[in-house]
Length: 166
Image (tube, rainbow, N blue to C red; front, top):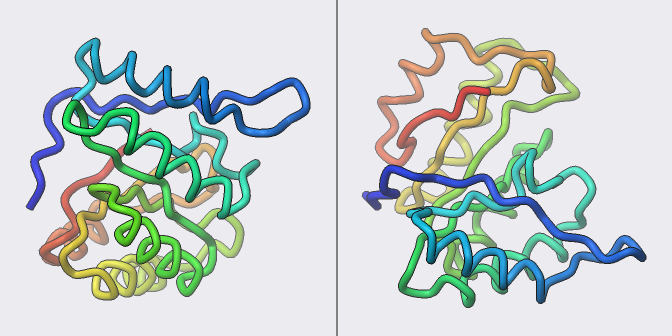
């Protein structure tokens, strides 16, 4: 599996005054972060304002950031969704674009039980078995806590590499 290093930086998504993503500034910011010690950039997570972005904007941002940090840092992309099917499609697309791994948030609207969370994350990981998956537990925003017992079960899946707790 991929070594994401020690410094994983959650990158903001810059916007223009009209609300569009500023891809030029995103590229400059990504290069700056990579040049100043970030081993991996985590894009399109909470800090990257993923709920405000369309999938097309996210995919474009994946591409822009990858090009900006090529050879200097890795890229982990937020691909989570309340819909397992949509999360799988986004994860497959991110892998095809060339990002190095994905961040998968706990579903934040439908609040499945722990067994449902396990099935959700297992399905994503199994759909992309060679692609690293980082679980993202942020109960203050999702209203749902991924419990240690569930994480322990998920850790048995080879490409689930860890968890971000927030």
